[in-house]
Length: 75
Image (cartoon, rainbow, N blue to C red; front, side, top):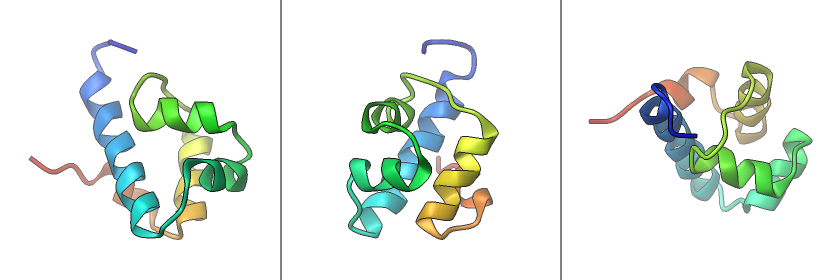
């Protein structure tokens, strides 16, 4: 998904990866909680695919974090 928003999606994906690993959760476990495939979860984490806001909300809820945490970008 190389587009003008790639860097933003990459940061969101890295945040998902960080919080998922922090909780000791696999991609499959998180994907199942969100009702999506493990492959799609992997594509979100690596910014190979974008997802809907609804999916981001589901991910944040599954990780038990505020949605805003997914948009906290580090330099």
